[in-house]
Image (cartoon, rainbow, N blue to C red; front, top):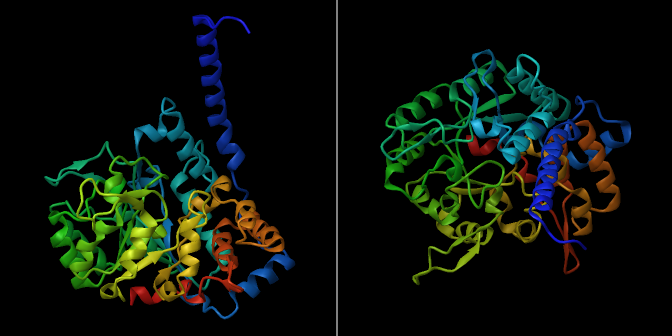
Length: 410
């Protein structure tokens, strides 16, 4: 082996950079999904059997993202980092989301493309049910000032509300930052127009759920009986620099205010300080363990729920998923959501891994893959119906009730 020289190091670095750029350019085309289609006879029979006994009109996907780039005056925006070729990983991530959602970046009406693909997937998969579309608010500082440049993307409430008003199979999930000076007024207006819930991603929106600044908003949520769907655990899908705000134990404040709280992903990723410990520094524990601690506290029965979005992803399908399947006493408080478009991103969910871990058998894996090829949105539902955990001679599965989610909005 020859000497390592500066020129050789620079050459290696240059080739590595070209490889990364090339991979970024190729990735979206590799992940692009074909148009949704009807299932073949064998796969359709498989899906019918899995959904037998479930009232399909009650299957409301409570976690479906609406993205856009601002075409046709939708008001949507995306951070400059997600659109910049200088930020290779963030650009690749965003391009991948659009690719799997059938969006052609070089075509007009890209926001409409995203919506129409989503509608087609839903109508081919479970037209009797509904999708709850989620907005995404800006970052707002503690003085109530909007920080436009800090958020990963923005999907306005107005866009979500108007789209849902035009499509009866869609329900609106608005996103209102509680530090806004007019947050309560925005919430009241949105609920009057049919908003079903409020969505937060605290780590990216820089919301501290335990802050007193949220109290007026919590009082309004409780008064209006509007659920708060909030991410907990570590955030990996978008840029987030306030990961500490994802600690599930910080949600005690809205619970104590009487808010119905849905913890997205059941906090299945990352670790956080155990705020219940008196010692400093506090021990870090798995976020999913902290979530289950809250769920097992009897005072939150009927008020605290877990969202099953993303629980089958490769980075969440270990201990956290097994714990949820075991927690039969909590299944009546688990609510299914897809986190679309993420289920359409092929590497994020590995049926091979799920089979290897015993959650699927070979035939189920093959048929789930066939559903994925035809309809990634339906795939998420079907996959979760298949999941099982064999322990002590028993086969543990998610109760059918986790898919009949409409009641939480009553």
